[in-house]
Image (cartoon, rainbow, N blue to C red; front, side, top):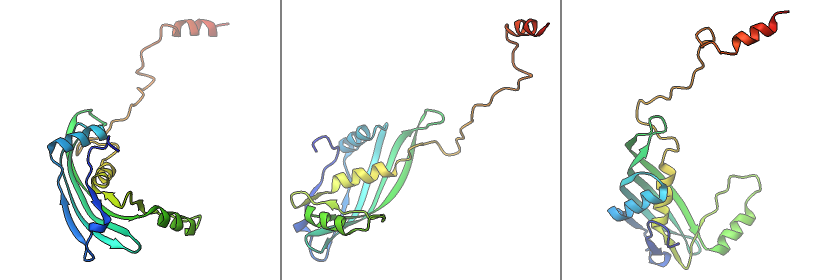
Length: 174
């Protein structure tokens, strides 16, 4: 996990019973690493306002919002532009045995979303922030007001005459 651009490890045992509120603001170097990781020109700012609570049997829940200012490349003009977005998050964390039990008990045809894994008694809030930053990116970004103009075939009457058109006419004569 050393290739991740942002890591903020928190032990689940450090979450008090009343919960914990955190604001994470990665510095400029981390934002640059996030941009490289996400293959975009720049991440100017990321702010994650999180609320962590304990869940039953050594579990945890993280709720909050990840907001970001990024530079992306327009799929229409291929020019860079800045955009901002905000993503809500609500993620449960559990140990491997609890996840296995919940997956086994889940109906086959359901949209069950298993909890994320608590590894070594800890959760990586930086990884979570990076995931939601990636989810917030527009996969087909374009500047406001930019419209893709589809390729239109020209009118056959206006098309240039092919040099083989004369040969085709000769072939048609008896």
